[in-house]
Image 1: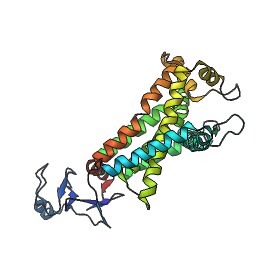
Image 2: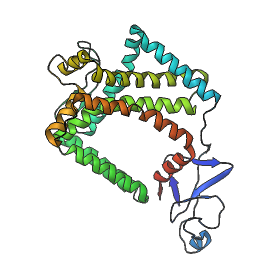
Image 3: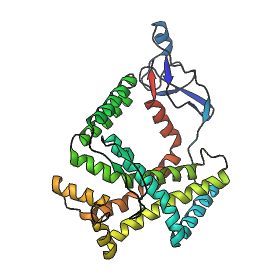
Image 4: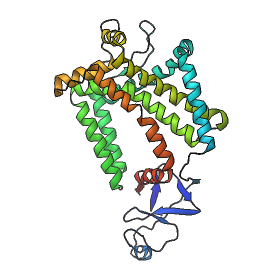
Length: 318
């Protein structure tokens, strides 16, 4: 028997799908055999093997998304509001606090994952934010490693999920075992946090999922996504085209603490022999600002496939 850890069954075009116990392919409920591997379910039952059966709590209707008049209107309103808000200094300052919040949360989450006790905060002296973190604690890293081991044990009956856990765990182990790699992850995580926020808000705006008052909340989510992306893109553009802004950025926090992109650039130069400089890393960031919209659009158009993959990764044999 199989159990679904998180995602319920999906009713697509009035067909309920279940997982094949042998190859984990989705087959319509009531099928006599798997269309992928050809196993006959009745023979499996006669042999005492588990049958392709779920006991879901609810059925969720999901279909691939589309871009229609409603979606265009939502995105247009959000983009217009973001441009107007960013054009006025005082509104730009107010909503930049939201960007700072997720920037520092990104640092804090990465800090704990890399073994640094971290606490995000706003910087009322020099502006923006500052995530305070302590020295590297081996105990925290060991706890994270135990978490990966527990996840691997929990998903031991799902080969694809197990491979994913080992890949992610391997990358984490690679980063956490050297100080310079930990520094790169910690420094880059702030801007990654901003882009993750933008991607989530963009997808929820275009897909219209999870809202109580979609008429108001969808344009608001689009506004947040576009505001964050405009903020990040212009920040990266100014580092490449505004010498005064670049000089100010090089000074760091109070002339003592290096800013994020300089930390990344310096570690790449010292340890890997690369020399992108702050400007080069800023160009990477500028390109990365396109990813949240691309990811949101792909997820929206391929919702059935994405949810099918997520279900296959979170379903294990009991």
